[in-house]
Length: 66
Image 1 (cartoon, rainbow, N blue to C red):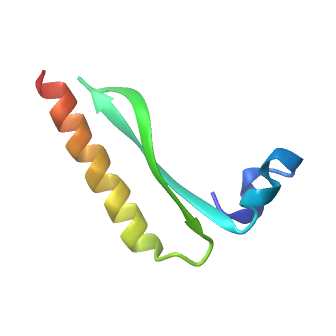
Image 2: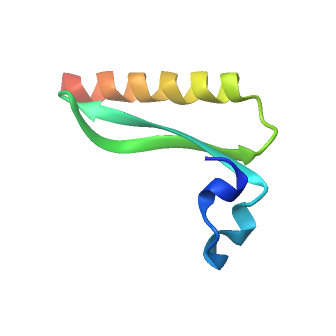
């Protein structure tokens, strides 16, 4: 989500200049959590998405091995 997509609630007012990129991580095919990056609205989105995906995939693999 980017800027105003966080909502108009005053609790999120400080996030108006921020973006959040998230991806779920899975254990045995079931989503059990989320990893993400919080950054400025003008961040490098392809890089942030690649990083979040890499961490999500790695964490999913590690947790599913157990």
